[in-house]
Image 1 (tube, rainbow, N blue to C red):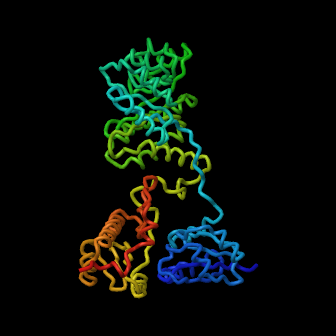
Image 2: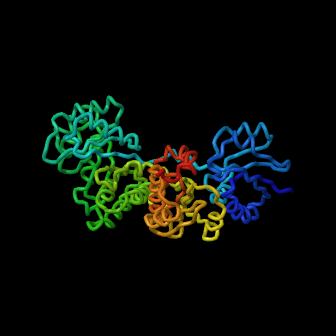
Image 3: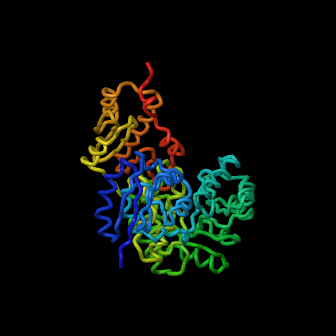
Length: 470
């Protein structure tokens, strides 16, 4: 059986790197190839209308792979050349992964088992409109219920109005209080879940027409809620139990054991975990913490969590847990490792880094014939080059000064552009992220695309305006 023959389209500057990637890849995957180098320096600037005029496709080609940044409708190329066209990855160094995943799309990650209660702290002290805005933010992040966090020692006289307003906006509501008037008013107005219930409020809580979260009378004793549970069952009230997750340094490991023990003793009892005791009270980025807690909840069939976003390092905790619960559901249900699933929770560093290498950079610098600057970041250094020279080093200020000594004064527009790019490159080196000129650094689900990137790729300052006019 003959091997598939592919045509890879690229620009002049990327040709050496593309050859270096394709030679081992073709042998490993099992295809033959040709490379079409079109008359353009930067492949990212290609558009199908331009490609249609410049490209020639040999007769023995079964597929044409265009750079991932190429714009326009590929069907015009298909009709003209009568062969298959497709967009490859935006970074040519991702071609091995691209061919490894050919025909396999990322899973949708829509299913999940764990309910998220997002707490609005100090809710009684908020204006109602602010309360609605906070609730809507939580809902957009994935929250299923909005938990109204009341203030111990105070009574929220207008809680019923706030619950009714939330319910009218389509929110499901829980109330977090031991104050009887607050709780009864909230439930009468439509709150469906009460946090929490133990021996101290059982006499009136067991009569509420709502589900209750049962907590231990003594957190050190797994069975200390037995009397509470029996009374709720006698009154026909629904409930879920929360053994209480303790902060690190205050019984964290022992509290994890309690969740395991409760599940062993009561395999069918609904459970909840208040994960804010870890995300809010641990001075680390919260995404990894949320993922591990989601995995624990999924494996123990803990069906709900209570979280919040008060501390700044946990300001996206709801969205993090929403993504985490979907990842762990997919992983456990399909018995696959939770990796290669889109990287939405890989925030600080990138999954992989690609480097051109010393020789590749020097070859690239020697091929430049225009004044536009190219910026790279790898192996601890920033690399800046154009037809006038090649400057590199770990400090963006020093690299910029080296360049100016050779090139002279730049226009304000060009200097600003380089400042932005060199700063991004320095950030990428510091954190171990992939830097690509004119593209946003990737921050997982927090990535904000540079909406002006395409425009800037097309309108980089050219020879006419590189140097400031005297």
